Length: 166
Image 1 (tube, rainbow, N blue to C red):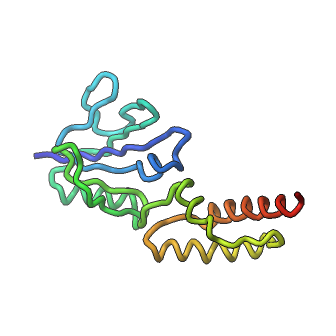
Image 2 (tube, rainbow, N blue to C red; image 1 turned 60 degrees about the vertical axis):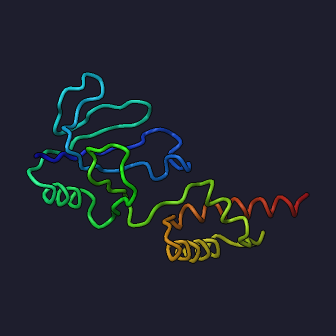
Image 3 (spheres, rainbow, N blue to C red; image 1 turned 90 degrees about the vertical axis):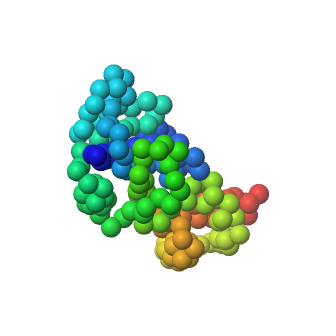
């Protein structure tokens, strides 16, 4: 039996939505990787893109352990093994990008609704608050960059300023 690695990536514009924020993955499968259009076997390189989903082949391996090792080398330390079984019987393992699952913009916006952002907060204060909130989210088991949080906090601050002017 041979083992194949396929990378599947969302390449559309909605990547920070609930549907696509954690879409990208590497799969170890027992079926050879095939191109999207002609369905020819292709063991290395781009397989095609369809409906904003790009697919890439990353080789063929003689053992599951060798395929797992190859995926871990591709992803470094920033991955997690998906604990939900695949709907496809030939997919043996699914690796997601990132040590923790990411949070979508919608969910982050809802979570930040209860955060107090004063209208007079300066950028340095927002950076500190964003780092603290990113750490809090990580403790909760979710990954959101402090930069994304800061952008949301700046927007909330601007809204608070606009309310003061009205």
